[in-house]
Amino acid sequence: MAFNYVTVLAHRGLDICVASPATPDRLGYIIDHINFVSQTFSTVAAAVEAIDDYLNQQ
Image 1 (cartoon, rainbow, N blue to C red):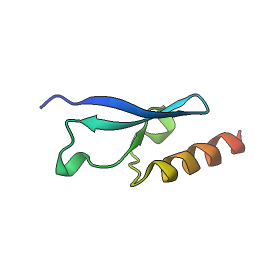
Image 2 (image 1 turned 90 degrees about the vertical axis):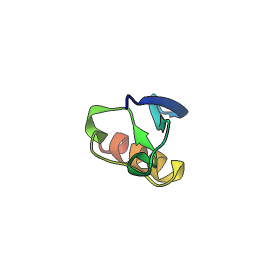
Image 3 (image 1 turned 45 degrees about the horizontal axis):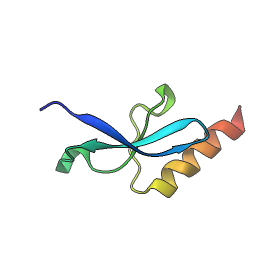
């Protein structure tokens, strides 16, 4: 099955997305950036926090 990702929020220039259609193995939110490739977040707030942590380290 091919997956598309839908942006639910753009935060500080990075997109937070969900898979469409969602399946049990593709639940949660991802950040569309190379540094977050293997990470999935359970909430948008957790993804926003990860983006802030990453960008504040730059």
